[in-house]
Amino acid sequence: MGGTKAPVMLAAIAGAHGVTGEVRLKIFAQDLASLKKYKTFNDGALTLKKIRPHKIGAVARFEELTDRNMAEAARGTQLMVPHEELPALDDDEFYYSDLIGLPCISDIGDTIGTICMVENYGAGEVLEIEKPDGAKFMVPAHAADIDANPIVVQSGFVQ
Image (tube, rainbow, N blue to C red; front, side, top):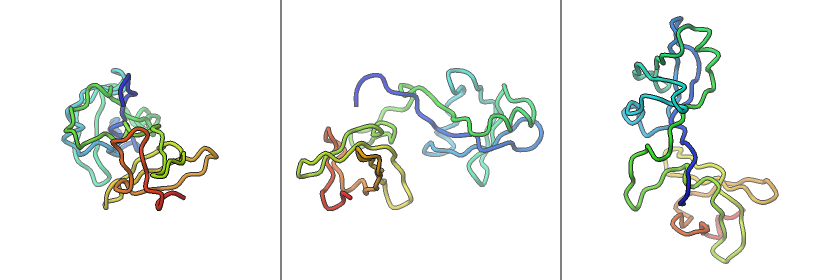
């Protein structure tokens, strides 16, 4: 998992909030506090002025968005930070983004595909794997050795 790493999405603009340029955010960071640590996003294109909790995630004000039209136009914008600005992790931790694109094999050596998504629906991480033919399937992360390269998935979970 070395080399230059792609920027990481911590949130996305879900839409306008009010008429003064505030936006609703869907947060992908661990929590609102971890998002507040960053003052700029997207290589300085967006500068965070204020952020507060909201039922869908957060409401934020960016210097560059000054009215509702600008806020609406920003809908869908992903808020990215450089990977190297993320906090260091313990040995048993990983960032979901670090797993995207990694190859997977079964525990009997068959090539499976690559990880295309990592989700957590509340009961633990789930890896979505895309097979060479484009078909996708999901595997609970506990059924895979994510420290291996390529990642080894228990054959009973391979579809």
